[in-house]
Image 1 (tube, helix red, strand yellow):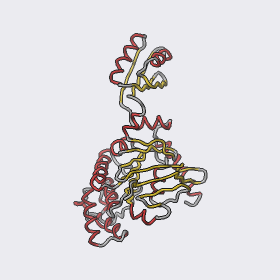
Image 2 (cartoon, rainbow, N blue to C red; image 1 turned 30 degrees about the horizontal axis):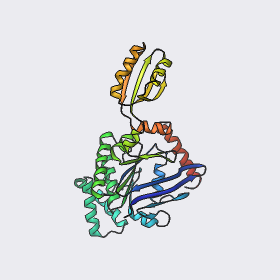
Image 3 (cartoon, rainbow, N blue to C red; image 1 turned 30 degrees about the vertical axis):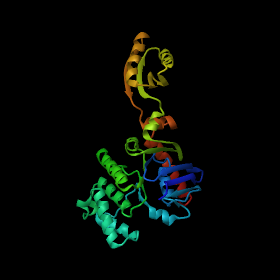
Image 4 (tube, rainbow, N blue to C red; image 1 turned 90 degrees about the vertical axis):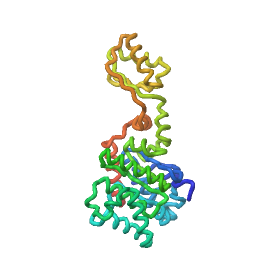
Length: 332
């Protein structure tokens, strides 16, 4: 097994003038639970499609489980499992029949299929419903079954493309538990794409932030949040705003200040200790603080700091639509 489950070097994918991937270079060690975080249309799914050999890169190179995605496509496909955003289950079959058919497609013997189907169903806790038709399953059960299908042939790398998209919060957290467990129990490398900040934070050992086809930053969730340099305090003030900003600029414990309509967004060290200091400053200078909020940084804050905008569905959808139109215009 390769030291790195995935390696890319200068990977590009373009549709006309639209770059879906821009010179993306990445290494994912074997056994890691790795996350790609970004809005829909940022390039996450395009990367998964290239790495799973469904799309040819425009330029650059990539290997998966030690196999080149252009030179050894069959070996790559034998080494991976993929759960795409769009469901791909036959709802007129039972769960067991869906998994068994998948095993047949990978050339597995009847005995090996029986063993591995049973193990995969057990891992995602669907054994009791194994012989029920998939059309009777809930959305969460279907996602679990798709994950099980991706594991039947024992892949070295499992790609999960937005695995909890459209699920309610409770079901989403259950899926997180299954993903963590399969990574721990099978040592499979998991590459998870998501635009849910809390999902990347809770699950992934490292997170690559992707925006506009580029890998913007790569680190552990804690490392990404630490780069902001402190806690976030939001203060609403009435009075001479310019004077209040000047006072904040003089405080060595304030590392950044942003102001909009009387609301100041501060990055400070040890926020819980600094909130009283803000009130002392306000009283001393005759300002009125009307509200104050303190919290630790989130990955949303990191994304905003790195890209200048938040992950918003409406922004992402427009880019995804442009990409789809460009792709159709060039015949796929």
